[in-house]
Length: 384
Image 1 (cartoon, one colour):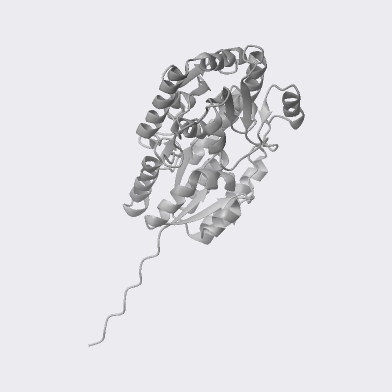
Image 2 (tube, rainbow, N blue to C red; image 1 turned 90 degrees about the horizontal axis):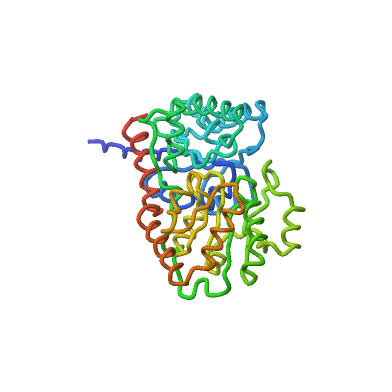
């Protein structure tokens, strides 16, 4: 009797993971990529090539260079982006598109709907479109509605963004799911003995963009110089010259020359800088769920942030840090002064509460499990 041929193992489902930079994927999504592989998926990555792309290839991931003008508003260029996504989906046979950042969310989801793949966008922040320009907000709403109409799942990183999309009828309640940010590796980001024992140091972490509150931070530093002459005010992040709201190098140099701030440049590993800080500051006008604050909280640092969507999820005023009024340098300066003049024991209470909140709500393991559960429903259980 002839032996039955061995049945070939099924091919792993392919998930296209896309964002507006390789840097974003390397710094925020690498644990998720590895978890996808462990769960039986084959992640394929699409993002603009930059100096971080090589790390993805070296880790064994299939990488495709996908040019994206992050801040451009040319409809022809954006239409070409949809075409590029379509070609990539047909070439790879991806069954789902897991997207992060604004243009991949919109144009990657549109292409996925056309190609018959499952769009799984993550609204990790709304950018400048929802910060006071009605015509731009109206355009964004129409694009998001078109993009997300075929999504079974749309992830949101804070309740206020989710509520806004429900109110504008961009998504239905059955589509919307909360995910606690990108998650934090609680072993990698943890308090260490002797942290922050030097002079009072306020550390801003983020791209040097107007909407991140960078000018308010520089002005607050100027206001506090005479009151707190021994304190330090540091900025860690890149200029991001391609963004239309970026601070110009000449303005940054003025801040440095006037000794308002110390500019630390960009760093792949932020932990040594957080470790030396007394508090981490992010006066951003709006966030999804700010990674800088989560990582600082995990390392046991008091936080100072604007009372704005996203940041409010991390900073509980008077418990894990101090909130200030968005776009107000004087309010930010008062919040920072409160931290500086606190007894060390009182600052430690804020630090301990910040760490506890991250442990309870923002663990990387919780975030990854949320994504895997959604993909299992869509790709394995036929919920698409």
